[in-house]
Length: 228
Image (cartoon, rainbow, N blue to C red):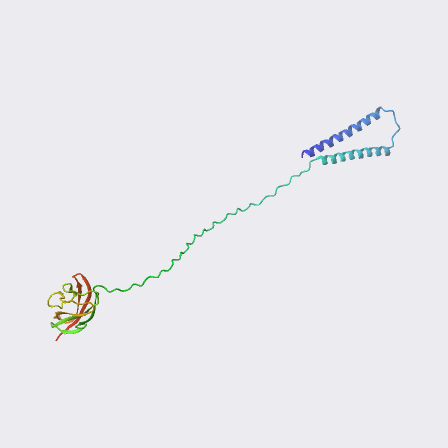
């Protein structure tokens, strides 16, 4: 906008100078001695030449002024699109896998059965399980046992004891075994008994003990009391 105003001012000054020059020329003609009447054609040609020169000078002035003006080199900066910010995702951390340690195989020795000092085997018993006996009838309870231990059953150390069930015995609930029962031998234990007075099935449990505390042989008994 400033450059345009300056050009306008320059054009105005140039036009004013041309008008002043024309006036001076007219004044000079007034005081000059009378000249011959000019040819209108020649006068018009002279004016046209002056106007042409003035326009040519004006156009040249405009060209030089325009060339002197700085070139607008402003280039708008491109608008950058917003850049996405990459946020790395959290990476799962794998737990370290424990390394299995191989344990050398060690053969476990097989346990060898050893004979107990005191043990027995029930070879047989009478009456047999479920034997029918008349009501209130006397009978003997007999258990044949075998000493399967490594020690003899000494006199005064082996006892036969009633544990539970029906009391068929007619005397005591415990008896001393007054014989030596060597290891590997059999022996018959006999107790006086009596069938119950009421009909039905009955059972009892006896046991051998060593020194009164070490029970090591179970002796069952089962009968059925019936009417005569």
